[in-house]
Length: 174
Ligand SMILES: [Zn+2]
Image 1 (spheres, rainbow, N blue to C red):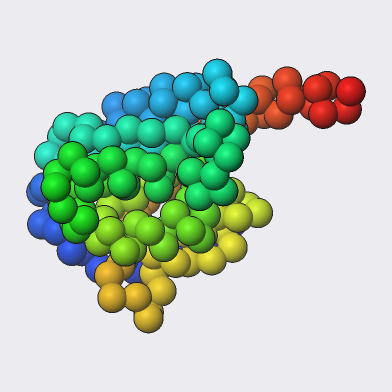
Image 2 (image 1 turned 180 degrees about the horizontal axis):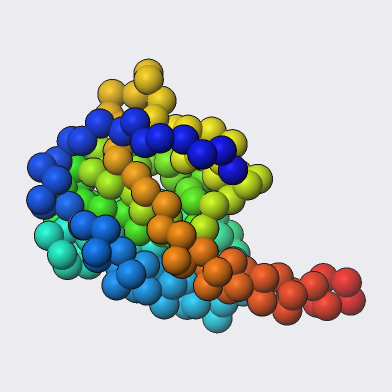
């Protein structure tokens, strides 16, 4: 993972967005949400969307149960937040997600004008914030969400994934 200085442009007033001190609480919510995916054999990734210190939407990955390639936690949570708030512009919201978003979800965060993205673990193969692409910092985008990597959640985010894949493996081999 490349170390890069953040270059996202502040969009919403910083005081309306989740502060670094809130990261633990909201990332815990995203991790709790991620566990809900295991019940239906989906990869445990969870997301919450926060506005003014309150969670307005939460979702976990539903790709398998919905047979939907786009049913990633972030995308479902963005849709739910827009429904909840009655608007598609989410500039005053922060997206917390347990794993670095893919290109689709990072793109959706840009389209939603999300104010801030916080992720718990980098994804070296598909992460599109700083691992394989830098969608949120793309100079061609009309909106650049701010983002930060919340390192204290990395271990738990990765452990959820590792335990999930360890359980899946015997079934796939058999
Ligand atoms: Zn995604």
